[in-house]
Length: 70
Image (cartoon, rainbow, N blue to C red; front, side, top):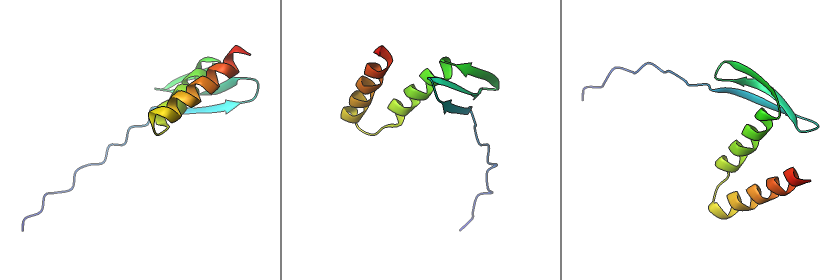
């Protein structure tokens, strides 16, 4: 059986976000440094998106919205 040559691995890293206290965060997204409330919002969106199941996603989104209204 002939085998194919291995393909080159090209990992994709969009960046990172470090959530901190007082609804602030910092990090690098697509090579751009970000800090303040925008990375916090992106962090919460990613938490909801990566959660399993529609029911869990809705529950988490409502919980985060409730926190944001306070």
